[in-house]
Picture 1: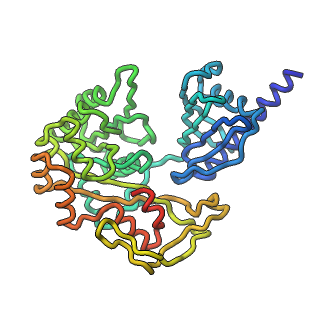
Picture 2 (picture 1 turned 180 degrees about the vertical axis):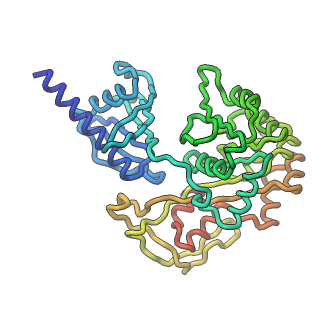
Picture 3 (picture 1 turned 90 degrees about the vertical axis):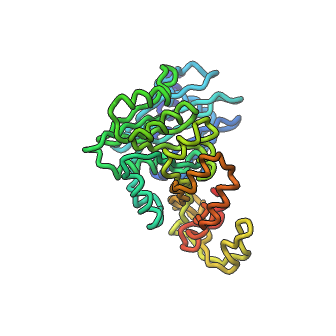
Length: 390
């Protein structure tokens, strides 16, 4: 009888896990969260950047589901006190779905997060969401033979996708492109992709030094995390390489200031840095249930009126197609800073944030919020979304 119960739960765990992954793929989810509670296992999926509640897993079969994940991901099935991570592949309808699994012990069990790697493909440059003028500027800079190109924004704002799209503009048959990532999110043909391994000593700094001995033309560094990596990457840009990278900063000004705060000499930053692209992802109103409305109050950004009352805007409603969220799909909003002589002078003098802002205001460089509200007027997103991400 015990053997039959075990077999039943094993079959149940297989079916439940396959169904969870199938639903996540159909919803274009990026992550599945399995969160143990005392009376159930809560299931949520991250769809277009927001968590969506799914039917819970019964408590009697939840441990078997976790064990099934651990077996597939080659984790220690008996270890429940320490966090673990691994990778697994599941076959659904003849297609292989790759996932990264991470466990985290808590009061009533182990939380598991599955990151879906299925269908990850390089976005074409014209699908990022850049307006025509910004797209032309960024494309010209990305094609240059030398420079330092930084995308910035919080986690999940699409920075790496933007860099992949920029690499797609490069003729990789004639140019040696080498990347250093943690981890490699998308496999790109015709370029060399390296993945850091800190425990083995393969850090960003060590990997970047090794890349410079590989006769590279274009280098992509997944993230600048310390002064050593920043210094090597900026020196590489000064010595004739095109370097693409990301920083976890909120906007273009903070990115420039952060590079100097990392301890890199200001003159190196000033001469190497060519472009900073700040970005956010905003959700698109669901085409099946979106509804028009009029803005009831004026919207200001400081002392600047961005949207006057009465402006025609889109308002999300929610339906089965969009999981009652009112949104389906995402697009980017971008603030671009091209480094010129005036900005270089501010960098060399270690100017503060206020001096950069004054220069931007003088030049009428649009903020992310201003750009977002322009997208609102075109019906591409909503006021709530712009306020949420900016």
